[in-house]
Length: 167
Image (cartoon, rainbow, N blue to C red; front, side):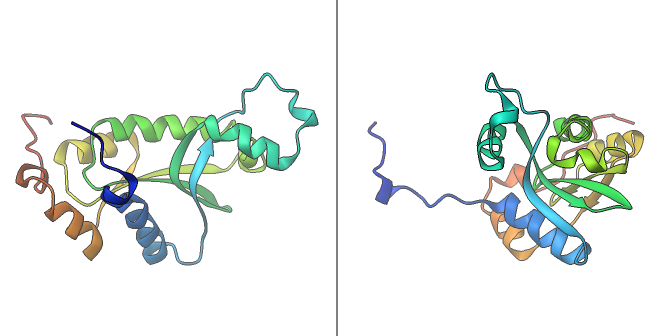
C-alpha cells in the first residue's frame, strides 16, 4: 500500500506535550520551566572546548530528553507526562534523575534536591504503588484536550488497568 503524500497525512498531534505544559502552568505558575530538556553528558568526538554554545546545543540533541525540568532551587523537579502511564515510566524518571546530575546545562544545580513527578491522565494502580515505593510523586490529572485524545483511543485504553494481584 502506498504511503500517503504529505498533504494527505493526518496532522501530527502532541497531546502529551500540551498536557505537561498545562499541568506546569496550573500547578507551578511561578517556577521557571524548560520543556523537552536534553539530559546527560554531551559525548562527541569533536573537541568540545572549541565549540560555540550553539554548536554544543546541536551536538547535545542526541541525548535523551525529559518532558520538563523546573528550576531554580530550592529543588529541581523532573516531570514526565504520560496520558496512559506505564511501568517503564518509573524507571525512566529514575534514569532522568541520574542524567540530570551530569547534564552540562545544570552543573550549577547538581547539589540541589531533585524531585521526580509522573503526571498521568488515566490512573494506574500498579504505577501508583511503584511510585510511592520509589519516592516519585504520581499525579492523576487531566485537561479537556487530553480527555478528547483519550476518548478517541480504543475503549480498553480509556480506563485504568487492573492491579493483577500487585501489592
